[in-house]
Length: 172
Image (cartoon, rainbow, N blue to C red):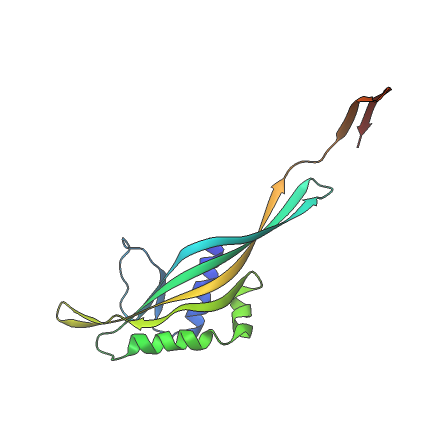
């Protein structure tokens, strides 16, 4: 999951303004000064698993295909009207350039759909205007898992078929 967050943060850093900080959402962490974007994977659902046979070294590969929902909260400066909305629109624009995403995501993470379009959640907080937007984006991800099942070194066959008795030992 760390690799997924790193790819998403690098992509967001590339498409948001230079003064915008991208952080993983954590209620206990200190808040940076606005503008900033918090990012959190709020769901991770398996869609399919493709498993291969065991290779000559005893390794079996499995590829997991998952769907992720990434929640973004964009906080703008209270002194800059519509800053959060503008950053949200830059992120939306960035969703339309899959070739740029390929540079940041590689082939194991891809945008699938906008789940929640940008929603403005402005409020007055401590006599200041709180300029905030939330949005949820869907991604598909693949993850390769290697399982070391070991190499089969000895095969023993022992039994009876009808009246024929079989006793064999094969060392690989």
